[in-house]
Each structure stands twice: as structure tokens, then as C-alpha cells.
Image (cartoon, rainbow, N blue to C red; front, side, top):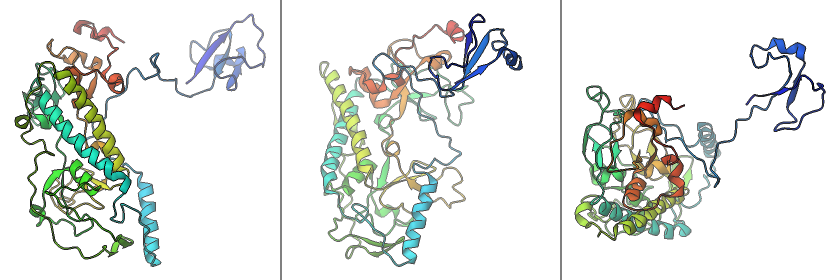
Length: 426
């Protein structure tokens, strides 16, 4: 940040540093040298000193200390690979270290849960996460009976209000025919809680799932599979619990911790952990129960985010760098169903990398509507509107208090001008 201050011509120009925001980074300019500057402000006859502190100005904050506005989550392009959560340089260094140990015949040091054993301290966290996940499904299903939701037929846009908005940001295949306007239809619970599924494996360290054997494995929510591998026992989805750790030499397993059969258990049909037919399973809340259900759902949403983040700090979850496929386990599967960018070069295989909590439990941000029954949002005022996660927006419209964490993104302090005055706002 370049700051210039003018000194009166009647004051003597000395070499004593002046007091200010950056007294140690001051360069004094004599009047004879001022003519070399092209700026009209620096070309005055008065003595000028220039502050050389180029640190960015501090972010404008409210009186309570929080930021006033924050940027929206970026939309990743579909014609590029996702960025690595861990720098690629560190990934290569870790792989090189494992290779050197394997060449020397030294086993790779593994700690729970990398060696197949459970982390006993995280078993209660996994149980609480699964119960919170069921509460979240129930709360969202109940609120959808009283709060209208719209979804675009062509893209992933979701809007929670009486009518769909008029913002021209549709990214569907036929959006050019509609000049970017969305084609609204009635939304469902899957538009609020985006279904991210994973293959359930009896033994995550067993043989990889091949393309020909993919139908032998159940597809369940990735959060449920993460809880199962973290220690939750579900009869419909059995999992192997080891007492002997796995031993590895580089990338090769030399001891799998005992004999592992081909047991997969019966195909599970438990619907308590899934959003399928959730609106039919849960009744709408009463007139006086709506705000309480909204507050409980909002607390469950934060609890699921916190639990997923804590479990993923220890247990490995892989994500495709090109599509939304998730696999819970030490390595990804070999199913050839990736149809994203340049999938022909990979023969349909997924490009596995470490997953982030946002990929396992996406928030699906939507526009924040201040008056759900008012006039639809206009495209000319797009830069004045805020956003919030779909679950947060649903609970707020149902009567819950706006959490302090999401207020900066919702831009509640911005006054909406008239459409004719929008171009006059700086």
C-alpha cells in the first residue's frame, strides 16, 4: 500500500522521521526531485514524503470484530482438475520416502487407523455423528413440508422462496436458448442434502472393487460408510474389526492381519440413514413446532460438519479429482464410471486424491432471500445479494435465528437499491 503525505512548504524539510503508521519506512523527497514523478499529486511544490509500506490495508470489520462481507465459495471449472488439498510437492516427498524404505527392506511405520485398527477415542464421535446425521435428515424433511423449494431442471441451482429468482446464471446445456434464465421445477430433499454415496466394503484393506464386480457392493451415504469404518456397528452393513495390525512394505501389503474371506454380508435395506422417501416417512411440524425444529436442524447441520471434519482428520477418504465420486478407504476403487473432463484418457477410471470435508458433506450454497414472499430476485441487483448454505437458508426461513458465522456471507448490512439506481452505486 503506497501512502503519500504532503508537508507544508513553510515547514523545514529535515531528516527526522515523522510519527505515523509507518515511521520506519519513510523516504524523504526533496523538492528538486519531485519533478521526476509523473503523478499530479506528487508534482506539487510542497515537500512530500512517501510511505514505502506495501502491506495491504486491514479488512473493514464491524464493531463486534467480525468481517462485514466475505466472498462466495468459488465455482470450480469443469474442464480442469481439482486442486490438491495437500501440496503436490509434499505428496511426492512422502512417496519418495516410502520407496526408499521399501528398497532397504524396512516396513512402513503405520499407526491406527492406517494399520487397520480402530481409534478408540473416535468411536464415540462416529456414533454421535451417525445419530446427528439421522436428526438432520428428519429435520430437513419436516421443514420441506412448510418451506417451498425450487430446483433448476438444467443445472444444480436451488432456490428457497415462494417463486424462483430471475438471475441469469444458468449453466445448463440449453441455457443459451433461455438467455441464462433457470427452468424451475419443484425441488426435493436431495437438492438440500446433496447425495454423496460410497461403496460399502466389508474390509477396506481387502481387494479393490473391479468394474465387473461393482454390483456386488452396496452404495450407501459416504458419511455412513465413514462412521462404519470408524467403529459403528450396523447389522445391515457388517465390517471387519481387526485385532492384528496390517503390515506394509512400500505400497505392498505383506500381512493383511489374518485371513480375510469374501464375506460381504446381506444387502442392507436400512432407510434411516438415507434421504430416500424421507418426506413420506416424516410428518410436517405443527404451527408452533416449526421454529424449534428449525433450530434443532441447524444444530444438527453444524454437528455433522464438525463430526465429518474430526473423523477425516484420521481416517482416509479419497475423492475423484474430476467428478463427485467418493470412496472411503486407504485407496480408491477401479470402477470405470468417470465421465468428467478427459475421461477417455483414463479409460473411465477416476483420478483419486485426498478428499476434503466439503466434498464428503457439500453445503450447496443458495441465494439468501430477505423476503420469501416478496418480489423475485432481479439480475440487475445480483451483486448486492448474499448467499448461505441451503440447510441454513431453509432453517432461517422456517424461524431459526441467523448464525453469526454466516452473516458476513449473507450480506445483511447491504441496502438493496432500486434497479434503476444500481448502476449509480460505486
